[in-house]
Length: 316
Ligand code: SF4
Image 1: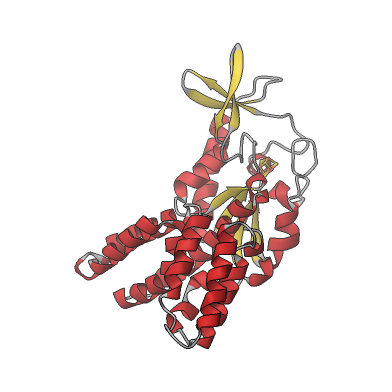
Image 2: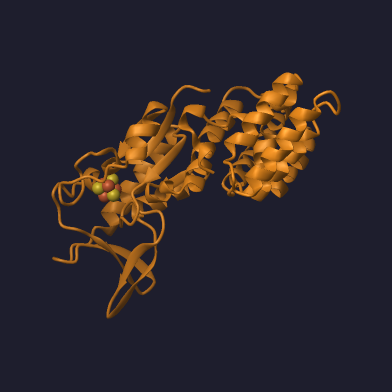
């Protein structure tokens, strides 16, 4: 596994007392579990922009198609100040080479989705995005971004952490001088994982790779990275995992280990039926791959996409 990941985070989620009321919104999954594997880069745009702690609350107001950040008590308009600051902060964070970002949900500054948009004389819409979150996502389109509340869902959590580590591997591939051969080797290792997220996208990346040698390097690299991260952003499902697991059997020797193969098929069926979590068939596959000395499977990121100590596949 690579060295610690670099994870941007809304400061209040780490227990920093920076909220409008002087409190925090500690997210235990970040501070007690992920903590061991990441270096946090905390950001509180409202404090950084000079709103102070404690401070009056602000809200997003939609008027004539424009979104503004307003203090409803005294009408102070923070929009331009916050947008300017968020733009330069998002640019600065792009230079920090983050592996991902966890945002505080529902905040008019940090919320990623479903933030309230207040309107004159009618009920609010819930389709807004915080001003900082909008700049962060626009300026870092490949960056895996999630909200802390959504990380309580085991499927979303596993998918997000998988994307963090995959993004790090992708950046490590393209950071030094790379060759098409390096990308082919990388793609071979990532193929099963990609297939579990986005089978069509995985095939498309394979086709792109086949034509790589005749293309300008920078356009190929940028298109491959876009395609890779958008495939990884698609949710892996039970059906897609079953497909990958069944496909993997084809790499094992056909004879001499019927019992092992039967147990593996049984584990796949139990997983499909929801009787056992994903970790069960994947662990059996790893054992079989070792026994059969199957290098393709053993080197595949599908078998170990994130540290096993996180136990993410025990819950999906
Ligand atoms: S939600 Fe964002 S702006 Fe609000 S306190 Fe947390 S880090 Fe600061």
